[in-house]
Structure formats: C-alpha cells, structure tokens
Amino acid sequence: MTTWQQIWEFIKEWYWIPMLILYVGVIITILSENRSPSKSLAYMLVLVFLPVIGLIVYYFVGRKPLFKKTAFEKKRLVDRQKMQQYYQQLKPEMEERLLMLEQKIGNMALPFRYLYYQHQSLISKDNCVTLLNNGEEKFPALFEAIENAGAHIHIEYYILTADDVGNRLTDILIKKSREGVKVRVIADDVGSKKLKDIPSRLREAGIPFLRTMPVAFTSLANSNYRNHRKIAIIDGVIGFIGGINLDDRYWNNGKHELYWRDTAVKIEGPAVKLLQVQFILSWFFSGGKDDFGNGDDYFGKKHEKKGDAIVAFAASGPNSEASYVMETILLAINQARKSVRICTPYFIPTDQLTSALVIAAANGVEVELILPEKSDSFIVQHASFSFIKPLLERGVRVYLYKKGFIHSKTISIDGTLAFVGTVNMDTRSFFLNFEITSVVYEGAFCRSLEESFEKDKNNSRLITIEYWQSRSFIHRGFDSVCRLVAPLL
Picture 1 (tube, rainbow, N blue to C red):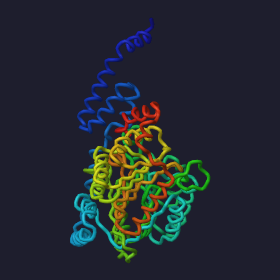
Picture 2 (picture 1 turned 30 degrees about the vertical axis):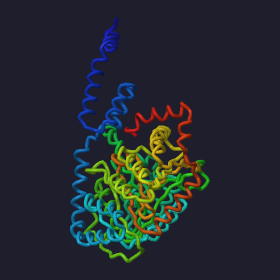
Picture 3 (picture 1 turned 135 degrees about the horizontal axis):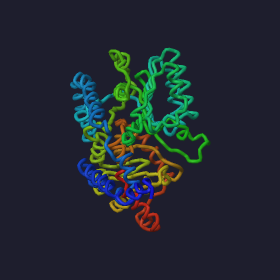
C-alpha cells in the first residue's frame, strides 16, 4: 500500500472526529448567539438532517457577518449623530405637529409618535403623494422627473438590471450628468448582478456608482444582509419609493409571460428631505465620501405646500437596535377599528404579527390579506402557505392573487393610514435587510390605495378553511417541510 493510500484510509476511518468537533462548535455558536428559539432550532435541524449541505447553508446565511459589530454598529452611531442635529433643531415643531395629529386622528397618530421618539424619524406635512400601480405608471413618471432634474439625482435600488429599463435610465443619467446635474447611484451587490457595463458607463461619465456590502469569498456570510430599498430622489423635491425595482419584469409590456403587479408612490413636498436623509446615510455606509457640502443644496430649500398628506418614513436594517419597521406596523394594526388590508408577496410572519392580525379579527376588525397564488420562490411560497390556516380559523380573510405575481408591499389601516414601501411581511425584511416604508395619512391617497386593493381582490380568489383543509397531502406536506426552514428565509 502506497503512502497516499495509507493517508486516504486514515482519513476515511477518522474523518468523523474533526467533523464532530466542527459540528459541536457550530451548535455551541448558534446557541451562544441567543437567537430566537425557532431560528436556532431550524439551523440545528438543517445541520443534523443535511450534514454537509447544512454546514454550507450556515456558512452562507447563518453566521452573523464578520463586520456586524463594527460596520453595523458604526452605521447606527453615525446615523444617530447625523440625525441628532435635525432632531433637536425641529423638536418643538415636531411635538406641536404630533399634538395636532393626536387631536385630529386620535390613536392613529401613535405610529408617528413612535417613529419620532424611538427612531428620530421626523414628520412632514403639506405633501402630495401619488399612487403608482406597476411599472407602466412608475417608469414614465420616474424618467420624466429625472429628465427635468436641475440640481441632483440620487438613485438607490436593490435591483438594477442592464435591460431596457436599466439601460434607458443609464442613458438619461449620463445625459443629465453632462448637463451639470450631480448624480449618485447605489445598487445592492447581490440584487444587482446583471449590470453588465452599466457601472463602467456611469463611472466613465463621472457618475459615482457604489455597491452596498460587496460580497467576496472572505465575506460570504454578509450576503445574508442586503439593501432591499428602492429610492429615487430628484432635486430634493420629488421622491419615489415602493416595491418596483429597475427591471423590465416590472413593466408589463408583453415581453414577459408572468404579469407583475406592484406598487410605488411619488412624493412631492418636504417629506422628500426625509427620504434624502436616508439616501445620504446609505451613501456613507456604502463607502461614499462626505461630499455634500453644508447640506443647503440638499436640505436648505424651503418647500412650497404641495398637498395635505402627512408623511413619515420607517427605516430599519441589521444595524438597528430594534425592528422599527415591524414595530410601527404592529402598533398601527393594534389601533385598527374598522379594517386592516395587507398586500405582500412573501408572508413569513413573526409570532407578534400573527397575534396582531388574529386579535384584530377577533375584535371585529375586517382583516384581509392578499398573497400571490404563484410565487417566484417555491420554498417561500409553501412556507408562506403554512401560516394561512391559523389565520383562517380566527376570521382573517386570505386571498390568493391569480392574475400573475403580486409583488406589492402595502398596508391600509381603517382607510386612513397607509404604508407603501419595500417591506415584505417576513423575518428577512423585519430583521436582516435594509428596508424603508412610507407612512402616509391623507384621505385621498388612502382611498386610492383602498380602491387598488379592491381591484386586486377582484383578480384573486378567497380562500376558505374548508378548501384549505381539503388540499392534497402532498401540498400540505410541502408547506410543512418548507416551514421548517422558514426562520432561515
């Protein structure tokens, strides 16, 4: 027997010892991180039943990132420091505005109060908020606003693709840069993998282009924490936010088989300054230089009254001390007296969210939830389906959207308070990704969102408890199996 054969025989006989040590070390690490019991158990089940694959999964998505206690905590401190000056300067005005809101809408003002005191999120009035359904409405409005830009353009998106939409946007940005408009672009490193030559074209035109949290072999665990935001700001006076990425899929122009239903909003007024703050904080975190001067070009202009909407933004991420987005949503649901209407493409709720929905339904609130009948993720879809039965049993009305894939991320409370943004109703959006949602109080806008919800209901089918229980054993089995890994999704 050769030396190499002897070595191979030794490895085959004793390889289990280092593997056992490795597994024990990983399990101790999981337990010491004090995650939620469901998430810890899910990782350990994957490790036990899928030995090698389980280790790979944990390495990629389970470990807390190497820079979590440095970059994320630094971002949290920087965010607070940069917000503090605005917070203190506007404190008397904000407290007066909160008092006015409470007198006008009672407990429905509590989400605004929470965001102000816990998240230092300022509250703006005199805004015009326009609902944009699908890419067919958003992209023309976005391109027109960018074409008319005179000072600066800020773009921050999870997905930017080198297709018709992405290339057209790039052409316009380069054109505006040559006209002297200051342009900055941020794209997520994982979401925007099909950029082709867009970064080089932008940089050649003198446009700074940054990737959020670039993923390399030495930082694979960081791929679990993404910038899921979709923000565009033009001249500090027009802003866009919502679920629509810069990708052809969101424009139903006949080139794609699957109809893509999504929602965004166009905001005009002082709220855009608050959106500007979030972009600038992302710019610093992504490695951008502090080249915003004294800020007058971005925050100094006094806004004219554009409308009657009161707007705040709930933003959170892996750097947050708490899930401000989730807690704001829970607080809003708890104030509902008439209705709660939610659209979400992915539904992996926390126990708190499930409890809030069933308690609202038990108290006579009409709770309605629209989910996609067909999803772009088999595992996430079946994991989502596993959470439906308890809701049906407690009176929540669940609809499955059948016209295509619904990617909207909207919430309407009593037809008077609205959320439109990037936040899915899942643990990833609540705890892992950088997310943002607008919180809007304004009658006309909320009515338009309610009308949109009704149209989506007409393209959906209502699920009954009898139907749900009658599904085949295979379908219900897929739901149960996928739910085991739901805390990891």
